[in-house]
Amino acid sequence: MDLVDPNLRDGSTSEVMRCIHIGLLCVQENVAQRPNMGSVALMLTSYSTTLPLPSEPAFLMHSRTQPAMQQLEDLDSEATASSRSKNDIGVVSENELSISETYPR
Figure 1 (spheres, one colour):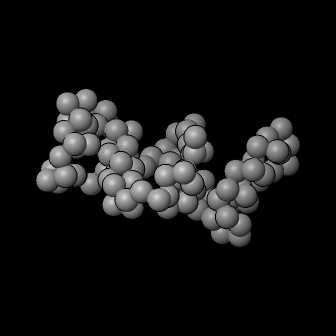
Figure 2 (cartoon, helix red, strand yellow):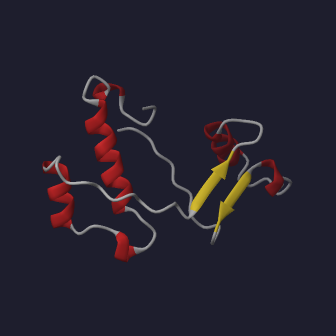
């Protein structure tokens, strides 16, 4: 629940998790697997609808020595440093072009 804005933490955990689940379905790498807006509206309003499992993300970040957020901060502060080795963090991506950062509003 660390992704949830502190103002929303008093709400229903299951409802927040359902919204995150629907959000993950909407950003799947394969566009054909993403739900259309009618399906999203139905998923948000009908709790009797069983949600499909989202596919695995194309980009994963494995932490060996430090938390992922610390690694992202290090990358931001040292983006121009050419001495940084790829072995410092375990980045796994099919195209090595996508990085998603989540910040609560």
